Amino acid sequence: MARRNLLLCFDAFETLFHPKRTVAEQYAMVARQCGLDGFTTEDVQASFKKAFSSESKAHPNYGKASGMGAPRWWTKVITKTFQPLAGAGVELPKDLAPKLLHRFASDEGYTLSPGVAPLLRSLKQPPSPPPPSQWIPPIIGVITNSDDRVPSILSALGLRVRPLRFGTDTHTDPSTNPNMNPDHHQQHIGGYDIDLHAMSYDVGFAKPDRRIFDAAEGLANELATATGAGTTTTRSGPGAGAVLPCLKIYVGDEYAKDVAGALGAGWNAVLVHDAAEPGRQEEESLERLGDGPLEQVFPLGGPPRAVRAGSVQEVLEWLGREVRRG
Image (spheres, rainbow, N blue to C red):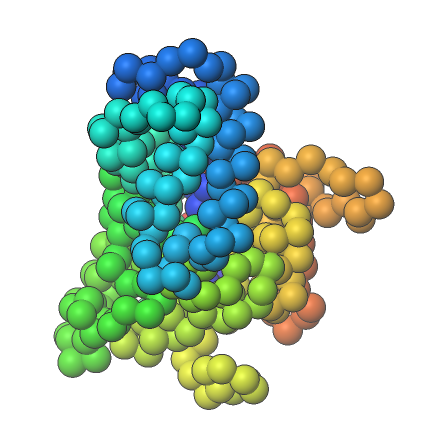
């Protein structure tokens, strides 16, 4: 494992982190703190679902397509959620939208899944004793159908987040400077828990569309080229002839978006949390396969494969063992 280049990406919501309480419960709680009452959590859930759907149709991609941006878009969703509950002509509290916007861009609304922070960091640490060849830390990223708040959420939850996301100038991040001392490259690769973000808000395409996976791979190529953390390969399509990680693994909690999308883009996939669906072939369990080496679970040169795990923690613990296996 120590000699293999790895691109490991995760879904964000309900995979790396999840709400402390349901979104409807938190919306209702904040509204009551602002002095608005007379509704149930179920009322808020139904109204939120209708408001979200309405705004998504009117202004796709969290308002970016309309030039309004995510904060204004979410403010409209919040207003459309609570105005019918408050009643016609009733002015909503002025601090309602700002409080909810702050809550769901920070650790007020979310918590990391168990074990994520220490286990991600352990993947970045070289084996002890060190392998005979140069240690290349994995590139770890996020591929998610979301607006652009995900990096700030992960940062607020205590992860060390590289400011590298699709659509931004990678050279504003000093760790991608090709003139940097190679020793510093490795320190910077290991100095972040999350190296890159491909969000549907930035990319313009959402999972299961392969273009969001390709966007993440392109970012990884740029980072690998700048840091030397990759192997030159040749392929057709975007990034042909670029420096590519040898193994791509995507971890998510929804079969249709995460597993089917990853496999369609040529990635291996790990499904966590999702219940079996009628008529769907059940994935093999990582618990059963995990006694074998990484090369046995995800063979190099073979077709992409999907496996099932009970949690993100199980996936990271298994990968950690593979890293230390050397």
